[in-house]
Length: 456
Figure 1 (cartoon, rainbow, N blue to C red):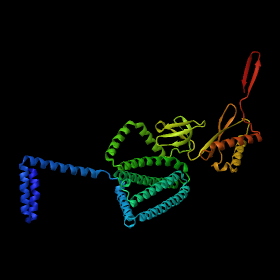
Figure 2: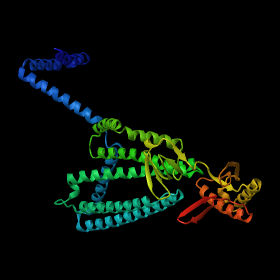
Figure 3: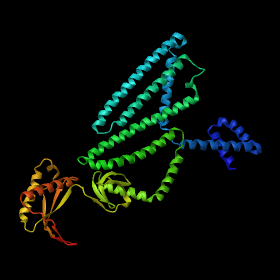
């Protein structure tokens, strides 16, 4: 009854708006009544309605599928129009009606394609030369640029060769074997072109992002390149992973694969991985916090998790150290509780100067200041010495002498070089000024079968 009402209502409304069609509406109404009274006709009518509903649902589902980017940007339609226009240009000049005209068209097409290939190669070369200067200015490696150059030249040559071959098929009207007119070739060529376009756009986009990152980090870092060297690779890797996932989804969309179910499945898989990899998530969070707070940088000398050495690499999950023996330690952030950074902003080199109880402490301190002054006037060591020597005073009395505590403030990573040179000059100054640096003396006395060792 409801179906009858829905079908009759539009007819009645139409009848009110257009009285001249009353007879036609009555005939349609009688036909509908006859259809509903017949079991066979009613079954067929309901089947048609269901089929119509299924088609509408299918169209709605297809509308929800993400369209390929080349179709969204109109690249496919533009390419088809260009090919059609080129084919019409070859055929409408009237030269293809004779053998002489076909030969002339073939020679002309060959010359045009040769000039096109030459122009494309020169254009690519000039572009690469300009880009190479830009890369050198930013201190970026030009390896990828050369790779792109070879790829662009190769693609340009292949495209020109295919276009010339297509021109020959169109000019000579070859119908027995013309792969350009086959459906499989057109479909394959469309897919290859779309994928190539997406790859070129992806390469341009990624290199642009990479260049922007390089410029931004250089301006932000200023005179602190170590921080940029630490954070920039991590930011680049994170962006590359996100970009690679998006690029893969676009490629699948270009191949005609519906990526909406993949996105839904990726969300579920991400939740499952999050529960199963809690330690890794903890590493990521801890690493992100350490990097943002600038606790350590690449090149610092630090001690963590019972290991010490130079930090060679930092990721979001681990730190890589190399000690003085060359051993490399890889430490996850989840294993780090305390970080001892020995080269943060500046460094100290502490020295315990041991002198005899008979020496004048004030005279020794003056000698130490003279040694420090001589190093601060030496252009080899002066740039790395931040402040004059700090004499902290008599620290303790040992068995062999008086211990004077001093320390040198230096640039990061320079404390060992400065400290060793200071020790060398201090020893020479003590020798010149007859300052005694005591050390334990041992006397060995042999009495028959016994040896007596006295320590002084």
